[in-house]
Image (cartoon, rainbow over the protein chains, first blue to last red):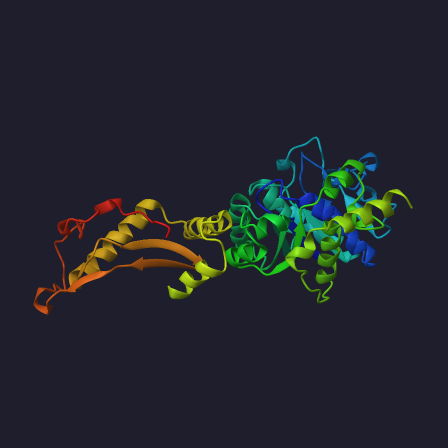
Length: 268
Length: 119
C-alpha cells in the first residue's frame, strides 16, 4: 500500500498546487510511482501546472459515477514516466462527491502507487473534507504571514480531529532578505507558533511563475532554481533520507549564481 | 521573564514587524484554539479575581490576564500583583451571597475594561 498524503493549507494562494505538481514530479524522479490527485472540484488547476490540460479526458467524477474505469481517467505525464494525474471535474461543483467515495478512490490508488498526493482546495468546507477523507498523512503549507499561519493552525485542529496525526510543515515563499531585516517571520518563528515538525522551507522564486506559464514543473529544469532544489530536498526527506536544512543566506541566490544559471540555460 | 527580556534585547530588533507578527499570532492562536468567547473569558477572569481577592488585596495596576501559546500547549497567563495580604480573620471561606458582583469593583479598579494586552 502506498502513502496517501494530502497537501493542505487553509488559506489560498500559499502554493499548494505548485508544490503538489513539483513534489509529485520530484518523487517520480526518485523512481517512485506517483499519482497526483486534484481535489479542487469546480476550480481545477493541477492539470495546468503540469501542462497536461489538453490530455484530460475523464475525471474523478466519471470514475465515481462508474462511467469509466479508474485507469482511463489517469493522465500519464510523458516527461515523467512514473507520474500520473487524476484530474478533478471542472464543470460540476464540489457537492457532487462525498468523503466516503473519495476514501474508496484513494484506497484504490494507493494499492497501485507508492505515493498518492492530494491537492486540497483552499478553505475548510466540503471540498476540504473530501480531500482529507482518504489521507493518512498531511503536508501543511504556509507562508510566513499571520493570516496564512492562523489558517494553518485551524487546519491542524481539523486534521487531528479527523484522525490524521502525521502532519508535517512546509514554509513557503520565504524571503531571506526580509527575514534578516526583521520584516518577515523566520521559519523557526512559524515552527514555534504552530508546533508542527518541519519538512521543508522554500524561498520565494520568480521561476515559479515562469514554469507555470510553460506548464513545466520547475524540478524538471536542467539547472533547478533554489525553490526547485528545496522541493527536491522535501522529496528526499519524505523518502526517509536525512537531508539537512540549508542556512537562511544560502536560500537567496548571489548575483554570480543567478548569472551562471542564466547563462547555462540560455546559451548552452 | 528575565530570559524573555534578554531574548528581546539581544536577538532581534525590538518592535520589528517580524516580532510583532509572532506575538500577535501567539495571542490569536490561543483564542482560536480554546474557542472561548470573550464573554466566557471575562466571566472566568471575574471569578478568578473574586477567589484571589478573598485572600489578598490585588493591585489593579499591572494586572495581566490573557491566553497565549507555548509550543503545542495553550496557557492562561494571569499576573496578579499583590498589594497586601488580608488578615486571616477577614478571609471569608464561603462567599455565599457575593453573587455576580465584580469583586474588584470595590477596590476602585478598572472593572471590566481589563482586556488582554500585549507586552
